[in-house]
Image 1 (cartoon, rainbow, N blue to C red):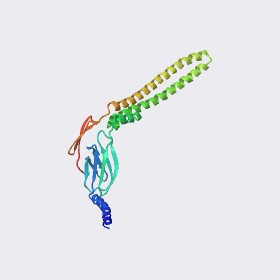
Image 2: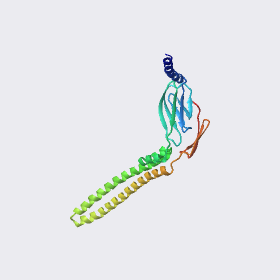
Image 3: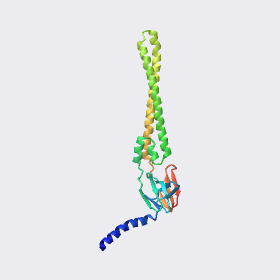
Image 4: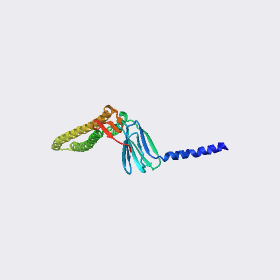
Length: 239
């Protein structure tokens, strides 16, 4: 009988202990590695550097963003209730040159943007997009001039009168030269597009901004900034 009473008491004690812990409330965010910038955005906006802890009675839907130079950004949605504790322990995934290269292989400039070099990424994308647009224009121009040459050639072959052949001959030669020049222009646009695409890929492999280290002093985080080619200082406080 005493053994049964002990088991019942133990079963009842487990949820009571959990409820007692939930009454403490609060919201904590920790990351691996530490020193990541946390942004909590909902009814109001709060920021901090991991590890962070909020002891306020937060309620509602919040968007959580955790980011650190050299690592992929983490995003999530949480629903907070006053009196209920919630803790996030996030392992950030490192950004690598090979991940960046695979992106630049698909879309030029995507690898640079992935690595935090947004201006360079936009530049490579615009250069390649401009090359593609130039190719489409040059290809259409080549088709028109080739069709004109083919038409004049057929007229030259079908002409029976010597004077007509003599007149069409020079016109046909001019049309052939125009088609030849248009084809060379088209080839140049193809080469320029491939070059921009290839340079974007090589840039991510050779000059991808590696994590050069950041450190946290109290609530001041000092970290590299790939856009400014220097460092930036982030001052944060507890929620």
